[in-house]
Amino acid sequence: MSVSEGTGDARYIEEAVRNAIEGAVWAPSVHNTQPWWFGTAEVDGGVRVTLYADPERRLAVADPEGREMVVSCGAALATLRLGILAAGYVPEVDIVPDSEKPDLLAEVTVRERAEPPPEAVRLFAQARDRRTHRGAFAEKGPPEYLMSSLIEEARLEDADLRVMSDPRKTRALGALSDAAEQFQRLDDRYQAELARWSPGSGSGRRDGVPDTAYPIESQETHPNFPERSFRHGRAQGMDVGAEVPGETGTVCVIETATDDRVAWLAAGQALQRVLLHAAADHYAAALHTQALEVPAFRELISGHLCEGHHPQMVFRLGRSGPIFTSIRRETSAVVFRDPRPAHP
Image 1: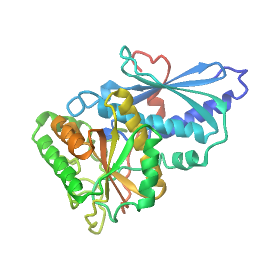
Image 2 (image 1 turned 180 degrees about the vertical axis):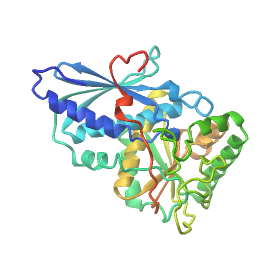
Image 3 (image 1 turned 30 degrees about the horizontal axis):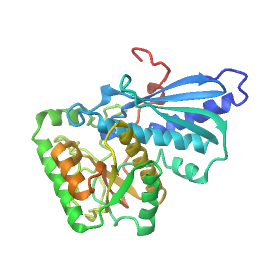
């Protein structure tokens, strides 16, 4: 990307945008599909970054409406905004719910300088290091004061973080997650889609869930929140050494008052703010989408556990012990001059 000469801050804006996108690509996404791309364009005195969903990376079986795809893109958008703030610029954000351009999600214009907020610097510093945890935790969840801070982080993005403090509700949510996982294992189409995003050892791919991102043996929690089986019968995964205590951690739900693309995008931004804030205090998250991919179960969770609000993500927080590693596509594979070429 380039900014016209004569805009005195052009080189610095360009660098700030590039670094922010390089952090944004490390946002979490369902099955690490990375269902986004960014368009860049020059504007008067700055750069405009446009965020698009990539429907070719949507999970057609698990996510037919694209809800999880947009939530994933929201996480990338939150990281992009934090990166721009951390670099000392103001991100002018315009959410674009355009029914005629369903893949177009948001525009972020970068022109004005500002003092970098310390919190934005602290959170953006976690963007590349934060990792999704798959398995049991070695320690219990965060203390109450940190959970209160995470609730406030979610509210900054027009979403709510519901903490499942009632053991009965935690068991119910775990049971629904387990039941959904079992139904999905019986669905050949679902399993074929999961296999598509489960690269084997030495694959060389830069997307999907690699064998460095989960333990070689399944770890049961109490109550149990099952992990996806990305092994598909293969003897692969990370050897985490000594047996990990089956700590569930603190169970949470990101929820919204409405259930449209704007709400999904907000939920993704709230999720990423919560995850980065938790990571800064050395807590990891295990994300669970199974029960939310079964419409009847999602409705049950909404009515019985979320007081009628719409659940967008279920996850657990705790201290993880082993550090799993992930992969991402090169930035050059997801950034194009706007408008995007027909075949990038």
